[in-house]
Length: 245
Image (cartoon, rainbow, N blue to C red; front, side):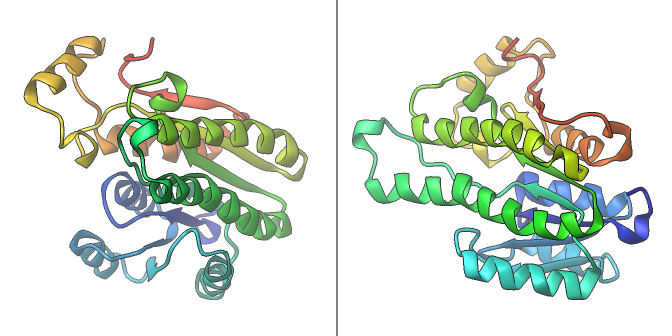
């Protein structure tokens, strides 16, 4: 799958933050990238205009199975067979479980886990036709180690790691690899609500002495998608500067 003319990747949730950084990294490496989100950001709009038609975006809710199926048909017609998938879409609602709205719980389960399952199911069908493919699920260190106030979010991310291990065994004989990347705390909107004191505490707890960046994580995603990782499957790669060591 090293021929750049055949490298078609789908990245969910590519409008901002880590999802957009992954799109940009893959575009720089010669992929044709299809992404979607509920709304288009200004940064994504600029990216779409800067890559000679190699970045395709549609407004889409990952929890809408019927829309996903038709979207992937359009991606195949535009770019060719999908060989790479990055499940990056996700939402988080913080709060104690006993105080959380049922609608927020349901929405996190539907997007973070249900959407990833549905998207993988649809993309694998195209990967099977070509006899190869790679899936990377974006999980989180909160799914590896528990944190107060993010119980449901943690559960969805831990479930993605379980999905990764099972799909790796299920799909390996078909030439399809499946891995997870579990980012730690990054300099994105995910820490925007923290005080300087809280961020300072995280930095002190991190052996590498800083918070992560989206580029730290997108580089690992690109590696796992590449032929350099051709014998890596079923793994969760934690990218957190040593925070959970």
